[in-house]
Image 1 (cartoon, rainbow, N blue to C red):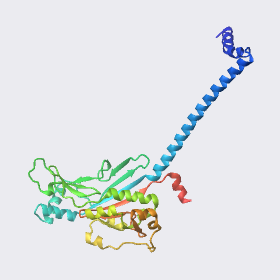
Image 2 (tube, rainbow, N blue to C red):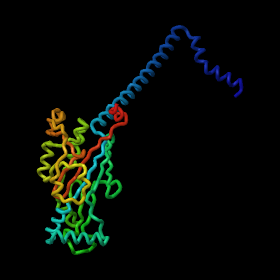
Image 3 (cartoon, rainbow, N blue to C red):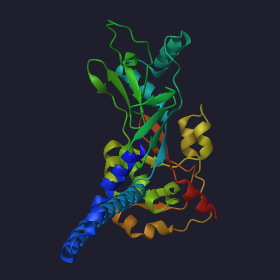
Image 4 (cartoon, one colour):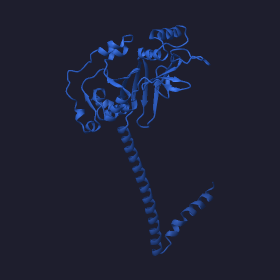
Length: 320
């Protein structure tokens, strides 16, 4: 750009300022007033906008803190131990045969490689994110993430078009909730008891919000609604020792007779005296088994363990 052109642009740009000084005093006051008014209006709008942004940020942080407080992130480990002896009894009764024959027939299928072996333990882990409300379920039997904590097994190989409708040929669904057979025509039937896992899970989470140690205490009284479910379904609460989970092969009567490990300090925990515990109707005691809780039905036992995830800074602060 040439020097002459630059000079013209500079004069044109400064013309309003130069003209301002040629105005009379009233006109100058009027112009200054207008400029000042516009400046104040712009600044007021900016301040309002910034204030709104700060308010939204504060509200977001409060909501985030509220979510973290109300719904912590955690993992729920669910171990399922089918009562195979009882399941074989149900099959034998339905098929008008003996337990020995059912076991022999199913074992022959396994040895022939037609069906996988029956497991003594099936493990599932629910990972729950308290901020988003999303959860993922890991299935140890499937070795992948699944949509629900269930596994289907068979006592006898399924054959397409077979006219053999004995119960031993039906699919068996195993989950923390229940153990039940599935007929392709009749749907689910022959449920061997159910455990209200959803209500138990929520109770453990609610307890952890108020006491991180009380989650592992032993229950001596459940909320009325949950107790009603236990009475209706026939599920029961039991305590087990840690090493019992890995003693596969022992008969059930031996496990039932094992003593419970208890702490020397058997005084009633402070948790029971809290307003929330009294209102909900839950009572616990200072005796611990393996850090989890056992529930039993006619067809299976389950072991539930809740572990809450804490933010990194909270974890470190708890140590110092």
